Length: 397
Ligand code: PLP
Ligand code: TYF
Image 1 (tube, rainbow, N blue to C red):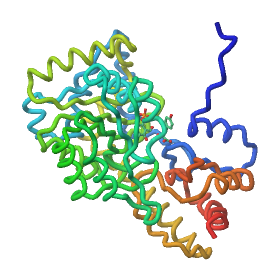
Image 2: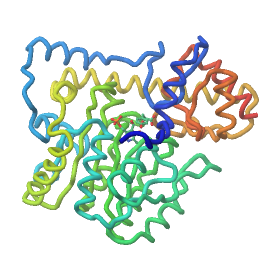
Image 3: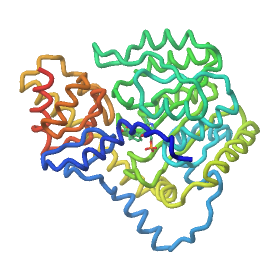
């Protein structure tokens, strides 16, 4: 049965890790995968997470099955992060949230459920987008197309072209939107632009699917939820996938959630029953630990405060690295306007480097970036910044 099986291509981002790990140069730098490293180049274990884990293990919790939709306290906390504690959507029980296996798992459950709801729809993702968006929705059976997004000339969003395209889409099209900290470009919409996107979704009868993988990495928990809040206030129905991989530094625990905003409590109950069926036939119910830890942090005033401070520290460090990189590139004679480096938000920057230049960075310097020119700014630190700036400046001049 396996004789004719062909080798599948490696994931363009996760595959880089293997090459990086095999590289023996001590100066190597991994700017490929989207992971936040601290200034010592380590994936942090947040103090709030450590405290919640210690408290949890102390009680030696039994390992029974979770409900199909996961931990209720967790799902409730996710809704408060997305919509704000006082949201009418929460008061009216109009939103359904299920715990999921990371943001990826949330997208997959959402995609599978959408395929049942609206099988003939086409899914539109940004050009460019996180590589896995296309693969996930295609795997769910959808045709996937793109809408214009990135303007290479400005390092910002090609908003006119994006909006014009959205306005041409047939009713019932699914539009995947990055709620903040766009991956891979770091270019986000302004509040006023989000208003126009919400209006276009309403006018054209589109199905918005917001992907929130970096809440807290741009401006803060509340401001980063601006797009989600605008959709929540619009009265439209929509999907949101949440990931806590980065914001809690819990990558391997697979902590995420899928939220569906419906029209009424009654509708929400029916939708939940169907989403549970999708989950049951995928993996039955989610794992316990990660969701329990995140719920414990979010529901304890002290741990929540500690987490917000730790998240702010990650956000601030990324900003400093952006500033440091832009300054060093300018000092090294790069003439191009570098404001895009500091204006782009979240973990990534789109450098404009070609695949060949990225290849040179790897072979000559042991600096790993995605072949599209995306670098993970959150992997820069005070020790590798000069080295990376030297190499990048040579490539950019
Ligand atoms: N969506 C986007 C835009 C991402 O960048 C990521 C990154 O990992 C994900 C979803 C997936 O999140 P997770 O790692 O929690 O599955
Ligand atoms: O874009 C990134 O680097 C992160 C991590 O299939 C990631 O989102 C990359 C690829 C992938 C899953 C996660």
